[in-house]
Length: 454
Image (cartoon, rainbow, N blue to C red):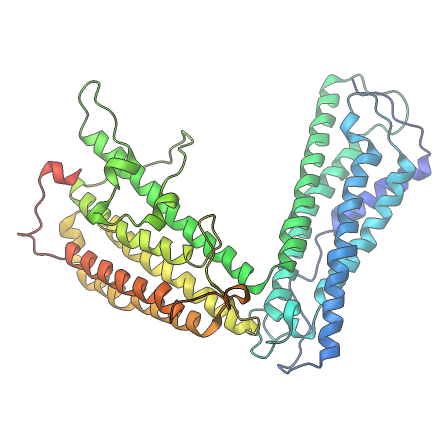
């Protein structure tokens, strides 16, 4: 049973309700990514220093203040003891609700005016002259603006909407409700408010403050980690998909063990099981399986033949990451412009996309005859896809990567970049050529026994 609320005047109640209604209706009305227009020019150092000072103030004062106000609102409403000895502090609630609006407006204005480089005729147009802008390079300012907009339009919109629903149903004065359904509804809203507050605080801490403090290299590494994870997810899904089809069409004998998708299907295909890729191959099975399609068994060898390419794609991105096994002996030059950083990001992502296009073309074929009939459409994927994307990625990396300062005094190979990537390029080219030969042999040569299909 929800206990009586603390004493509150009608005036205070009205002010609280009005403040929360205003937050619920206005909290997501930012400028929607609209920025003032500035010419593409190099700005003076004091202008850049002003932007950096604004960002530091956001990181250390404004955003932590917003986080504290959100948590303080829960404590002032005493929501965690709503169904126990509930003792809200309405004067504190009123004070915080009136602080939130100015705090949000201050953050909104600050993120919009971090640097003159944030403005352009199009938000996507990235600066080619902001090499020395540091933490207020245009791509960082635009991304920070987008992240705050997401916080406002998604997290805080839902949070203040729940608060608004809560105060509309909340009995500020008089005895507590004796309606059990009403009590349960209030508990549901309480739980929703606490959860949404925790999510909002996490976004403030991780997605905005911590992100804004990352180096350019660390920001790119997050993108590269996502590409490596995508390869892992694809390999695991394909393993389970083939395992499903094999066991569906070829029932095992009574008592025979079911195929382990990460052993019998994938293990050491064509002798390719690089030590640096083994740890990423294994993953825990949570017991839940996605929906699978029934495949033509003729296509299983073709689908399996893409494994080396997928693993090599994962290795490429893993080489750029800090992992428990080690860190690359290089970092990224801190004098890259926003345009150069975005080019490096999109080019490396296109390498994964090109590999996936080959996989999808094979996976979507009806049978071997259908696969061969698509040869004219698929061959350009081999000639113009991954090789070009990889070469462009390696060229950009060769220009932009620099040895880590801590590594300068250590004995390094004559050409560390050659050791890390040129050998990879040769291995990848060989694997791609082998896949092409495996896929497009003549029909007379393309015959498999039932056992070879599995």
